[in-house]
Image (cartoon, rainbow, N blue to C red; front, side, top):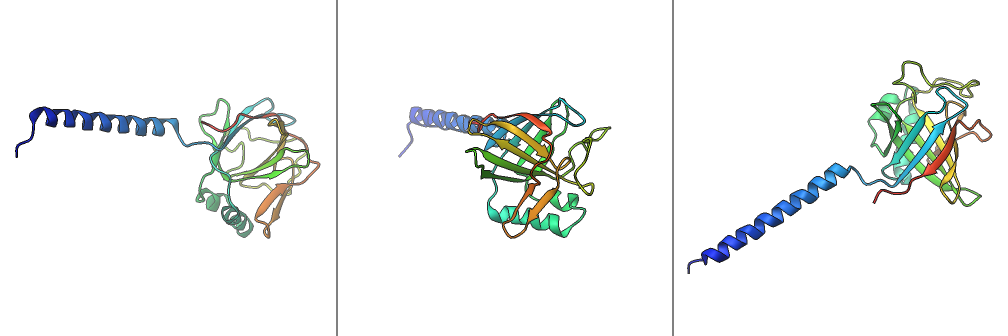
Length: 200
């Protein structure tokens, strides 16, 4: 039994249209980049450089097993930059005006007593490493020059708040709970912290 030429033609047209639509959707998804779990902005203060705007993009919040790998890597290697670089990237920190950003290898959030959240992040390289003049604070609290950086944001229920980094605070590791944090009472070197919300 022979095929109807008109039916074949329209079948081919429909198939072509569906393929084109699928390619368009795939391209749009690729061009849009990875779906983000959260985005924060902040401005540096009480440090050098001051007044620098940062955009912090979090691709995913980590489960305990992923956090454990980061903590184990940091604990086992005093020069943790190379091993951290090999771990999965869960976000980025983008300084305004810089052609390069910093990969996040640790992203964790915990409830805060005020109803907000404490956001703790770890970059695979020290913040300011790409700058001619490195980032610094007037009275560094860290006992050694770490090859990575820890960022801690404290946001209220509206998503606004403040923060600090390991430039101004001691890093505290808790291998049992697979978490790390910065010592309390440290200088806030991040101001105007604001949550932009998840990417649609």
